[in-house]
Length: 243
Image (tube, rainbow, N blue to C red; front, side):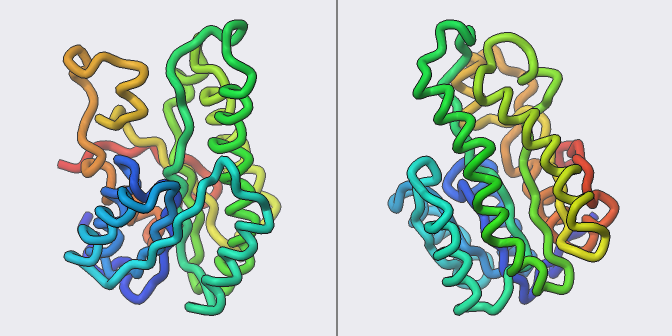
């Protein structure tokens, strides 16, 4: 399905915009007409995404923020800045992740465990909570959580990252049930295996024959952020790679 113009005149915030899927989704959303707010930890990688996005769509906005150290007040300040600039937020896409590699739980460094739970679950929720009032001001506001395959990350050695994935899957349905059918749309996106830095920490690249480029799943992000994603309200969409 073509997504040309699907996000025209919409404002989309992408957390983890400098990562594999985040960068690909930012470009796809810009091509679909959206103004993208690029949120990430490091300015230099964000600048590279900025240039790529500006070349294919409306000029994006940079918002450097380290999710690990950010407080709820920091997310509230971000929401206030977006309200002052745009008056609303049409879409929020969660791509930021923290994963240090496969490790038995009993040997996991406590700080690494806490960091994964925080970045992959708590910070995602804090950001969503701060943005919900802005999403409610849009005519079809949507928050999309990119999730990993629970059959894989719920098995041995995935640690805090895997536990956070299960928590997010529960959050999607729980939050939508509380908001109701008239509020912002809450969805999950479960792409297939992707060639990203995260996956390279768990699989050897030369033996990982099933992984696809993140660009193969970028259009699925556009769909879920657009009104066409309505059937996935409160649900997780298992995406197939683009043809």
